[in-house]
Image 1 (cartoon, rainbow, N blue to C red):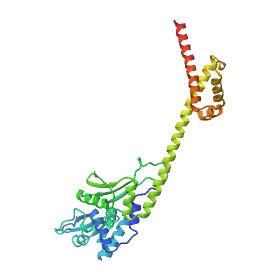
Image 2 (cartoon, one colour):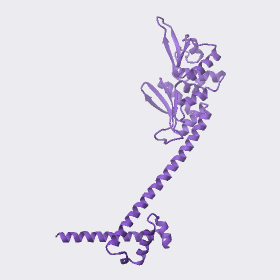
Image 3 (cartoon, rainbow, N blue to C red):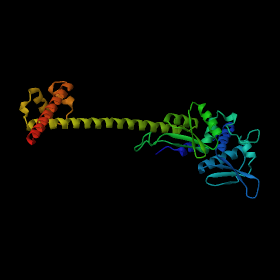
Image 4 (cartoon, rainbow, N blue to C red):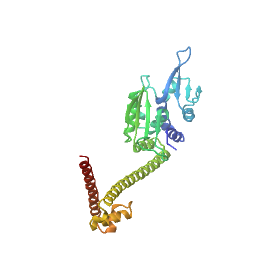
Length: 313
């Protein structure tokens, strides 16, 4: 089974922070996914939080109720709607002294891991290779990202991650600014910051399994390549022996070459090292004898071609 963002959000939702930590989480979540929706036939607005899943919706609404004794005006599968667009944003530290929504992380949360957890609940996602099946880091890479509406806010969040030694990259996607980490080590560090310890363990297990699979695949590929080269070399020698046998005869060869021929014919699939050991010579010495047999066969073929040309003339 693959590891994804829902696993991380589920693990974050298992914890019930209180006090400043709870406020930081709620502020990070709200800042990453809030919208203001105007009432029909009114100048007033509703404060809406896009939760994406029922799990996050239930978790956030419970924390807001515990912290501020506020119940949502309505809640569907993906969103929580609060009627008061002024009081709750102030309580969630979303509005600065000038009455505008913060375009950067408030200073009090600039180094808060809980703020990062809230942001991931609001706009984070993740994917990782599966330990089972045929996967590779190239085709199904590690990827954890946060998608923001504001580039300034995205930059301030990247600074928050940098404070924990996590180097993040930035890209643009339609109207979003995306902060992301790619390699398994950075993803693991980011998950630890988010408090997803169980997911970190699963990720590390996946990394280990995939590393073993890659090592085995490389070994098998090397063995297959070596076997192919051995088969090709064996076929060349077999052809040379056949040519010599049909034309000059094997008795025309000196004793060293005849011994090499006999050893090869005894086992056509044996590697050079094995045959050399039986003959009591070095591998390079045996290769030299086989090269000589091949050259003799080529000389015979060239002579046959020359003879054919003469006859045609």
